[in-house]
Image (cartoon, rainbow over all chains, first blue to last red; front, side, top):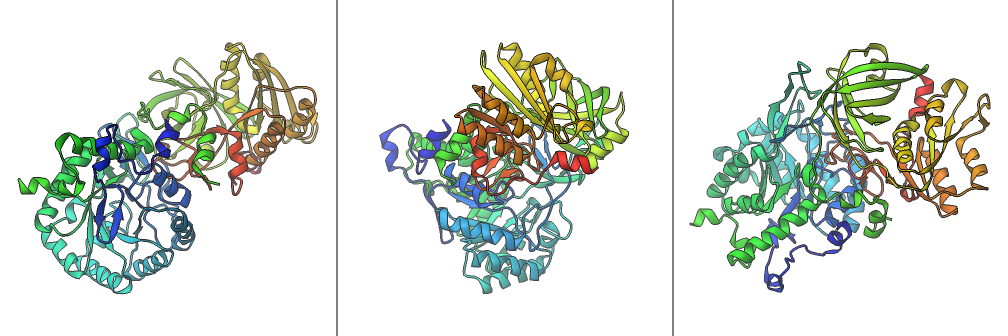
Length: 324
Length: 287
């Protein structure tokens, strides 16, 4: 099974020969994706070999773990909780640091064909610029600014809550690099008036949503579970929230590409996200239940849905419900 | 190095089907420490009674959570009807806390079983090789294999005689030999030296190994030279335990110890860039 899945090239084949005419490729700014599945940030993207495995498993693009200037150990265990209806994590932006990761990225660029989006983190303008420059030098195809990690002081949401600083970061990064610039937002930041400012500052695309700040308590232990106490909630329980955010962003900014992230576990979930307005879908914690086979499952399932419903190109589906 | 076929070959049969949906046991099950045995100055055996039944295979692991202290991965040293045995070497914050503060009656929390265990064969001629605390998963494996009518031989290697433990337990289920580097107990030398002697006269259908990676590498080389199949249990820093965070990646092949392993075909070792610096036995001795 494993070998068979890895040997398929584009994962858009369903059983019928008719399916050969189905086009699952999408564009995100100037990136071309063979299919709309993207490895979400924070999952497996900390080394070349892991990124390569996800490419082999059929993803359309890869987002790396959030890279900071210096290496970060992250938090002590427990860092991940399975709640049944979703997952809570506070890994603490564990990453090898920009200088070490740039070597992995250079290797990845030589051997990986699909686009690589580097998620960058920082607690100051200088850190964002340093990391972005290193990543672009090493061949990153695009950047995604992490403005929404809910559980690391001074990073993510703490930066993203400062609208003026965020605007300056976007402007500065756009002036130093020609690579497409995405930003990942949380539910609370996805206000249309704020996003408009970021788009005016030069943002090329939006990734929504990041995990939602949350807490899990074990009553038998009379204790919070995560060592960091609070973490970010992902998984099926946040999917309807993510859908609403993507829907509203697309409604206001139909020309801005959106990577819809949040609780996508099946082809049906992915189709919903695309219908709401996403050009591509981020896959993350679904790997807990389905492992890397999730990329093939979703791509094939979207293909089957298109066949059954008479769509030739997935691009016809993007934002479809807005045109009813 | 990292081509598809070679990575694929290194996943054992069970791991080969990991892409299929399966039930993941990752909720905490409360348990109570039922007994504690001091095995050596730095090694203790904890027997824990769980509130719920689990289905743990030899070689799989659990994450043991001590609230407000931390969570660590541990192999099952034994399991039967809600009773788990763990062999815990004092190496870091959580294990040191456990050695000092966890007593009979203490409450602990476990999520698991996680990962993929050893291949369980029947009627085969099997060799188990354990170095120091690495022997833990091999005891449970040996017990299960002995029930499957396998012929078992066990080689246990320790630094010196004060580190020796679990010999009588292994002797009940297998033909057991001990090596110590100072020669105070059993064969004088390393477990690899002892293996070389044994392989001059015998061959095995499968060799299961757990311990320091340097030792695993030498054992795998010896066994491959005689065309014997090997399975090794690897150790890396495990964080999420579910294959999503990437912390336990085996480089440069990108296999995750927590999800694709911890048990792998021994040939994986021949592909590693650097052997792991995680060295339970040595840190244990320093403490």
